[in-house]
Amino acid sequence: MKKFQIAYIPIGVPTFHLESAQKEFEKSTALLQSLGENIAVPEEMLLSLDLLEKFTKKLEPDLIVLQNVTFANAAYASEVLAKFDCPILLWTLREPVIDGGRLRLNSLTGAYSAANAIRAFREEPFTYVFGGPEEETVIAKVTAAVRAAKLRFSMKGLKLAAVGHTPQGFGFGRGLDADMLKTFGVRLESVEARELIDRAKGYTEEDVAEYLKDGAERMCGLEKMPERNRVDFARLYRAYREYVSENHIGALASRCWPDFFTAFGTPVCAVLAMLNDLGVAASCEADAYGALSMYLGMELTGMPVFFGDPVSMDEGENTITFWHCGTAACSLARTDTGAKVGVHCNRKIGPTLDFGCRAAEAVTVFRIGRKADGSFRFFLAGGEAPDKPKQFEGTSVVVRMAHDAAGIVEQSVLDGWEPHFVVIYGDVEKELVILGNMLNIEVCRY
Image 1 (tube, rainbow, N blue to C red):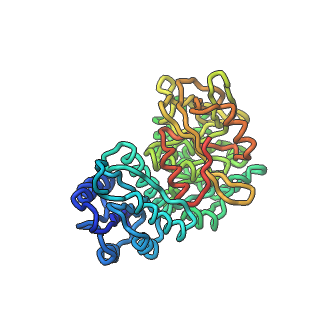
Image 2 (tube, rainbow, N blue to C red; image 1 turned 180 degrees about the horizontal axis):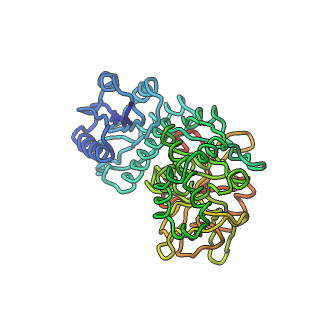
Image 3 (cartoon, rainbow, N blue to C red; image 1 turned 45 degrees about the horizontal axis):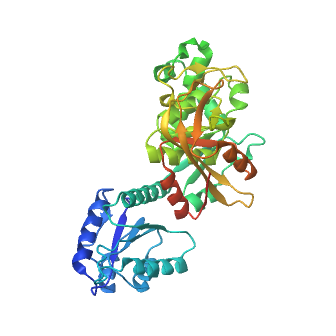
């Protein structure tokens, strides 16, 4: 199976100050090698088209770091563009000395030549960074670009399952297999909810004893649920886990109401919470693009994310509350309450999760959305999660927005965004902006 590869392509010509260029080449190599394992680095600077051709002959990059170690004309970038169709990070080096004497590198002029060629070849935006390899802003930008490219690469191996259909009036989350594959490289698999329900019904209590134990260890108060609901939760839990494992599913969008109340008698909410804890992005109301949004956040942070609706706003505190019926991962619960178990706020059947999420110094609110013309867009907003208790029955997180909460709500409603959002624990805005550019998707920052 192909591994993610970064290709460092330091281009230039030998008529500039090669001692200065060599120092930047060595420092840039060290930075890139610190960011991953499979980094293709040339033994020397590529100061001729022949050297460039020789180095790139056997590469299969998923990200190209194209750096002007000195000035190079557009023929160098054009050669790279003719060979590879992958994201590009164009890197300009700062002039090492300004003393009224010789221009050492002239990297910036080279960047203009390369950028002009890139824009002639491609529609999607490229990523650009200016500065030396020891500058903090450069390290942050290069790191974010690498992480975004890895995320793009990982989506090509993702299989996302849609369990059942979106309820009436929730068509915004309905995924189409061709769109998923074309835009994101993701394979969409569909299965009827009744198939998993029937599978769950076939298990005996003995068959699901270990799943019931696992759920009881993760949740607080499962033992207070009626016995039938506890056992049925464990049956569903096993059915979903085995389906995910057998079919190599990395993200899942599940139908929930009304089927699991009417046809099974127990909600699927807590099962989705378990999957989220296990690293499988799991959305409810069959929101496929919500599940994919969750997956991206989980890949970037290595931890679960919150999935829910914006339900309340406090202008005085500059906060927006996100809530849902009870599918949040247990590991997101406040430590003073733990992952408490409750009943569904409308149907009054459990188990669901019923807690407020823990605080965080930085969060990112994110959504993969679709416009009326069918094109995709990213919603992005930053903030923090203050220490707040549960706001409503179900699971909730309060976000103090980095910008005006009232303005964000008003504009995002006017812009026609879907009602499901993901709250990612961590600041990953840079990575998601770069990913949007790599996918040629509009990024809307609020």
